[in-house]
Length: 311
Length: 273
Image (cartoon, rainbow over all chains, first blue to last red; front, side, top):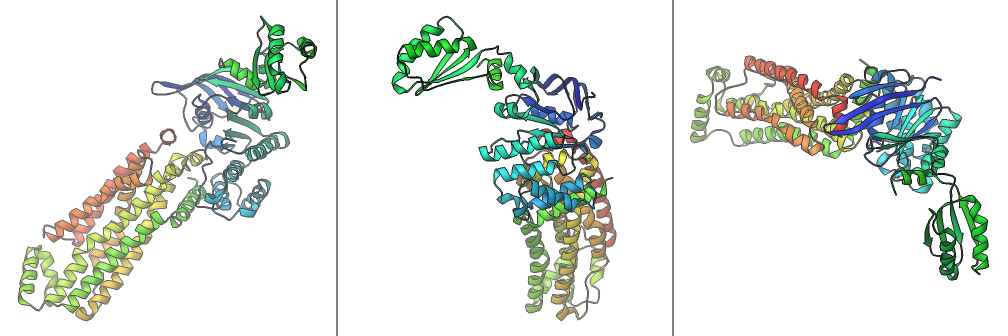
């Protein structure tokens, strides 16, 4: 299958700083691809390079079969970008904002009004479509920016920190919309984020970027599995049982690679072998510790990411 | 050129301007002061305190003698008060008119370029299919068209005020003369371009509307020089001089646009956001 995005040794420097340092990756049609990294890791610069807004200093890049550096205008007709800042004209209404971008992207004139109305409905903005955007909440602005990125029905969508600064409800709504665009409409989505739970929930594959270099690439499960077959374990023992339980657990895990932490009456242990769980429960009950809950969980993308960064 | 997209940006910028008091107020207040209030006060003074006292007449004669002979010839056959009125409202006030296209173009361009950065709306525009040339054309038209419109309206207003206040003395419509027509149709569009070109260059380097507007205000210097030059009797806005002035402005515009095109590059713009 021909990749939608293909880069090979992509490099971009700003003076002495190497913002993107030899990035090589492929993204396929219909995929939700996550680009993870700290602030300043080079995620936004990569989006700019992939859209022909910046030119690379070295390496090659093809997006939708086009060279962004020389065919940028043509390419940008087929991509949509949600910038980290919603980048909306706050003195204009939502409808006016969408109308301008419909014109800029060359949406057929006969379709503009209908398409705007559809997007306003889909993104639950129809009731306040004619109010100035300056009075919108952050979540509404983000939804409007997402609607704007979709006004020309792009084949490839770039989302730069799509839920940054949103409350959990607004984030959840944006997640639903992204999944809908990918699963129902078959769009390819390239998400830059440092929200690991978000990446785990939405992405088919992720790349972890550090100082402009990709240091890991795979599905969230594959990456998490690199942590080994060990699990995280939460044991709720009651406030009075904590001290005793910690003594018992020290005896059980002595000499192994587990790490424990405690939050009131819940003890958390990372890096536990599955086979050890019955033994742990038995030793605790034998010692008279009341065990109210035992919750094992597989390593997450977050565990992998933190391990990768030595945390 | 994608004219549909260019029109969309011009329309957007005009909508945004019309909803910004910071941009709208100077566009209304400055023409009202220079082209309505000043000539009205001047006309009232000449009408209600005519040059009858001998010392006033002597002062005016001295002033007139400093003027170039070709200008003095314009007043042949006129009463002293009529000469004074024409000198003030037709010649000495003419450079003030140029402040309007310069100022309007500078304010709008500052809002359109640096203001767009400040409001963080430029980035989304840079991700659209517009080429740099289309974007620059759209942005320049967004400032140039309103500057011309405001200049034209200001000229009409000034013409009405000048003729109204001059009627008791002149008894006829004496304004505009050929110099003013050249000024409005040839120099004012060039002056708009001057304000615009300078602000585009400045806006590429600054981040806020205020910075761009303040630095762009340097283009008023030639207008101040004209005011002083005329008052000192060194120059006067004859038809030929005014036409030459326009030509110089257009030439400077061409240089500014040449530099502007080089500064207005996507990569440069996005890294300075």
